[in-house]
Amino acid sequence: MILTTRIKILLSLVVVLSIAAWFTVKEKRTGSTFNEDLAVSIADTSSVYEIGYQSDEINGVLRRDRNNVWIINEKYPTRIQLSDLLLFGIAKLEIRRPVSEENKQKVYEKLKSEGIRVNVKEKDGEHVFHVLSNDNDPNSSYFLKEGSDTPYITYVPGFTGNLTNLLTLSENDWRSRTVFASDNRSLQKIKVHYPESEEDDFEIKYQEGSFGIAGINPIDTMKLVNYLQSFVMVNVSGFVDNPDSLREELANLQPKAILEVEDMLKERSNELLIYKPKDEKYWFGLVKAINEPVILRNELVERLLPVKEDFVYKQ
Picture 1 (cartoon, rainbow, N blue to C red):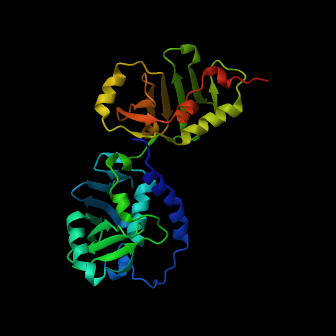
Picture 2 (picture 1 turned 90 degrees about the vertical axis):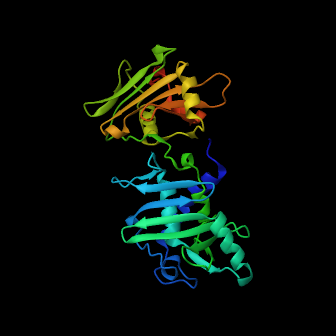
Picture 3 (picture 1 turned 30 degrees about the horizontal axis):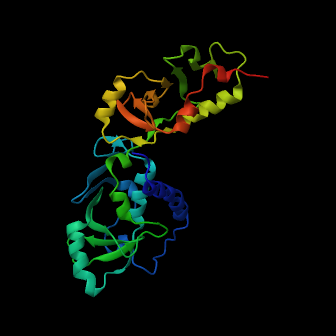
């Protein structure tokens, strides 16, 4: 699916909250803090290695691997921005107030029946609680510590939205969109092949301290540098809901282009087959490393697929 408005908002919060973190004071605020008053002490989120969440509608596990990468459901690396945002939210969550006496029982029952049960595991133990969006305030959540009968209204200072929003993301929403992530220090080769017009093929190769393109002289250095910069971070738009069906469809088509990147770091090397099925609005790619179809933005395809002639310096 294409990036939803909710995810775009959540990602934009990463920047805001990162700045806010620099200005977080050490003194206790007027309102009680999640860590102190509810005894869910996660002073150092680097000690957290697993976050599980489940409800009637969603079930997921985020686990930190030995390379400090968060993995969703033991399948895919997550988007760093989202996993960082979740950790920030858990660490900075604060109590606004207890739920009023007249609503206490109703909210308690709703949290137990409709809320998301969260289990945060860290080196010193685990912390279990339930959260649920507050219909009366989109910037707060109802919160219930496991074993307690007292629900609270909680919020994350500076956070537009609430913690529950993150915990309702689908597996595909959590997944990292990065296909290529190379820089000039490790990039070795970029090869672009056009099956229908091989005269447009080109290969950029690092040799003797610089990048060059065989068969082009003089090279438009500025265009070459700008193109290489494109591979610092290449993200796809999203993943499809029925990958097997689309994979089968693409297997019967000739790709418009095949993009190969070779990097000194093996995990950064990858191959992307690019397709534009007839009557489809979107471009699709098949990522060789995971053999999975992905959705590509039109502007990304345009940026990644110049032809050889485009690199010729024209006076």
